[in-house]
Length: 287
Ligand code: AMP
Image: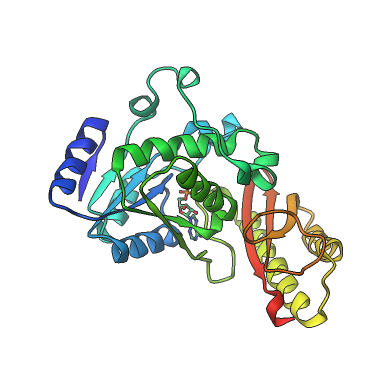
């Protein structure tokens, strides 16, 4: 595995791969790798001849200084995991290498309509930061295909819209959400939970799965009623604080009033200062 720390090193590697006619599969990450990221590496390997990953904690997508500074980092462990999981080239730049000395002076990309609502509403500017770094990385890595996880369901839509809007010649492939054995959605931020918080965190996925079954069995279609049920379920654990609970159309991400089409139930929940997200499909075809 080649470790590129500078734009110049990365460009040299990418030029060499392109000259050999390699199909590049790309997985961007913020590191602190877990099985969710590694499953995207596996998918990437099946989609191209060379797997490129990036590990970069992008300051422009954080809206809280403390969230950025406390974001877990473990570069040496990550490099070992990436090597073992078949990454051929990994890009691990410092912030200045990407943004120069003053991030705020740089050009930015503005995210499209899918960024409104959900995480876009409660984290202003977050998706502009995401599409900016993804655009920079796409220009540098020139991937044929890029893999993004369904864990970040809205992000996947925002990136797909970015690629369509700016005509990036890259195919976006979704990777399924990977969970811990007890159901908690894997996330680098889970490392910030203390043992008590980790125990409580499982409640999030439990409530989502219970709602999924309840919707299937009760045949209820009134979204307000379903949302109340989710909020009540989360409120049973006083240390959980919902940031949002929403049910949207799986394609448009528009909030629904009634479950008449395929729907996605999405939540963002705070445990202390740690904000976790999760989502499940509400499949009305089985109702
Ligand atoms: P992050 O490092 O959190 O920016 O995530 C990098 C990529 O990994 C994104 O495409 C995420 O959606 C994806 N990812 C993170 N957690 C999971 C998970 N539990 N299952 C599947 N993909 C994930």
